[in-house]
Image 1 (spheres, rainbow, N blue to C red):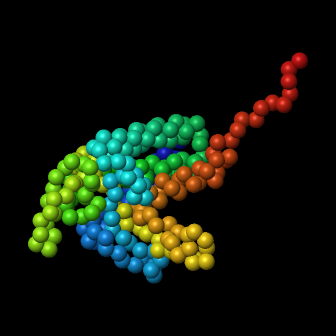
Image 2 (cartoon, one colour):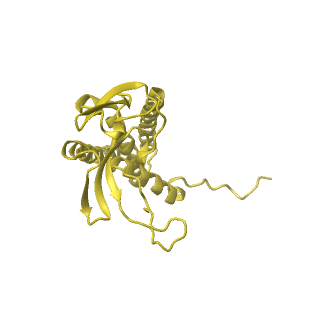
Length: 222
């Protein structure tokens, strides 16, 4: 059991290192909105930040919206750690533990951004992802010699934005009704998002293996 858990948490640590390395690299090497090809034009690095959930989805403009999301992530992380240890003690397979490790690594990776990035990186009021209409936090953007007022996102512990950078530039064939010519998957994401999505997809695909139903005896007692 200990060897399994050690391997799983080492796996999680590696994913977190990769996730944080990519995020810090992007924040220190790219301008907001900058795009750079990875594999041709169909898979690129595109630097943005989002104050909400995975894949750029938002959760409202109030401070409690963001704080609630971060607290939810923290609670989810605690529950997954507890569940992992409990299942390891019950003799769960390494595959099963690694799948939940993917989800744990993803949730932790995005929570790290929210918890600490505002203390290490300076907020630029002119970046669109740092502006949040309805927040009530006043700021001034200086652009091309002009100053204009903006409303900024909330800042501080558990209130930071999440760094995203991967994007698929693949469109549906134009002949398909309704979606022809549009991007198949327009969201911009990170390693943490990919980890969570992979873990959830594997659970859905392998649910009969991971959660087998107990066989009920077909024989009835007289």
